[in-house]
Image 1 (cartoon, helix red, strand yellow):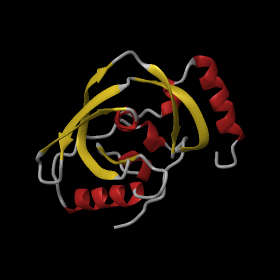
Image 2: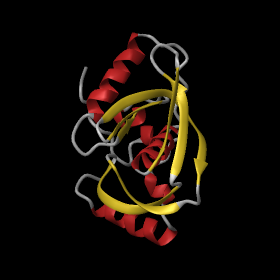
Image 3: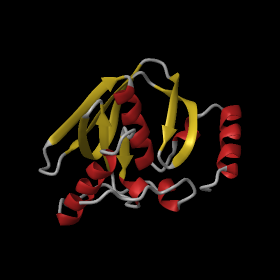
Length: 163
């Protein structure tokens, strides 16, 4: 359908806990098409619905060329102690900081046919699953930073040209 503009930190939709998708209709199908189109651009590992202005529980992913989506994803399991992991966010452009992430994660949800979807893995996939489900709960990765790092990151945000 279309590559959608990414909403930036400070936009209220990014702080919104997203609603579950109850009915899979043409609007949800168009949302998925836009999420997939939006994540296909180089350098993008995931795009959550609120990042394109829609407060519904859905995200797309692009991990090592594997592109897909999940509706109503739930982070059902993480493994390992959280470790500082270099992370950025399309909604906070130009910043890169270590966020605490578990090294392994599992998400369960559904596809457009209502069939179960399970995504699990380590590395970038685990990080993306945690990052995107955070977006659906109204959180950006800055909330996962250590206090002193968060303070510095917020200063960077305030000084950025886009804010």
